[in-house]
Image (cartoon, rainbow, N blue to C red; front, side, top):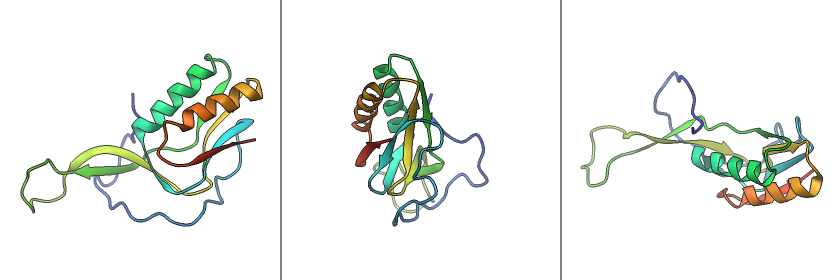
Length: 134
């Protein structure tokens, strides 16, 4: 099951622009080792879920994983070969805005070398550059 909000005030919103660094969520809060974004970008709900699955598989279902990001931005798309006009398209998927320095995942309860390997393999599923830190 992919992540998405239960309810929204407005179904469709403007995407906006991403820039600068993150200073609010750039430290560990729950786990011992984390995966931090080095650059800004957008991560879809499918990519978050894919990275989470890889991380839990590498950990062999031991320990605990925290996902520190949530996809709350709807991305719309119109069908191909449709004419111009007729309003904004339907919601196709959900993404999370990521600023550079944001902690994406946190892990605890397993040895450090296993956690680093799991987070590194999870980072291959994400479209932005990341680093493992503790």
